[in-house]
Length: 283
Image 1 (tube, one colour):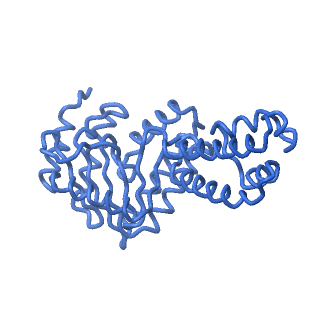
Image 2: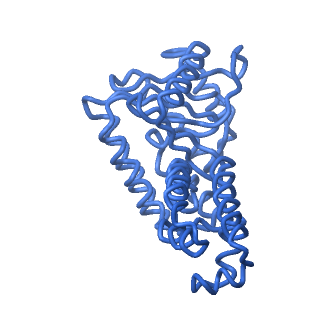
Image 3: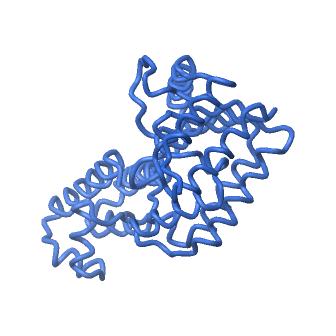
């Protein structure tokens, strides 16, 4: 879980524990009054389990502090907002890759303008089936999630239809290192780089590459997508962060513009992609 989310859950647990102790009850007796297992009280108080709205209302009544229920509900709503913003990959992929890809496809189909930065991977909207297959297989192996790889690959390929539809624009920046990270065989990687080159010049796509030797006023950390200037979807190792505050969106938009100043486009971008392809050891 994210630090903010876990801290908020622990803070709620601490407040609930405070109400219990003020009522002069130990955990065992309090659990009996609620009709719960003792372990549930312990998990909630230590921030290992998130209480529900019904739980906090029952807690306030059991602690003989019914007036505290509204305060607890407010804290829980704030916690739930953080949980919505922090979408763990394991939870998202619990229903398989296909469902996750179809969810992203709906969001992209509804968007008019998407700004993308990726530091270590070719964006999904540009991937070949072989490259996508390698990525999704690696994800399932790493997280232990369902292995509906082929269904996920087909769904990811269908997502790419939006790139060719009028009314959409994709402004994409890729750090050159991503061109050298192999997620499939050298032959398949060469095909992926060829496909990436093919998007340069498409009227719905602006594609820039940030060279490895470029002077940059930033460190190319995690990838992120800005959807219609209203939502940032940022990748971490274990989750996606969905950030929709005006300050967050404006900050990531500023970062994207800084990155754009360090990128090259058109024939210079072609040259960097070709350089990556030439470095492959092909049979």
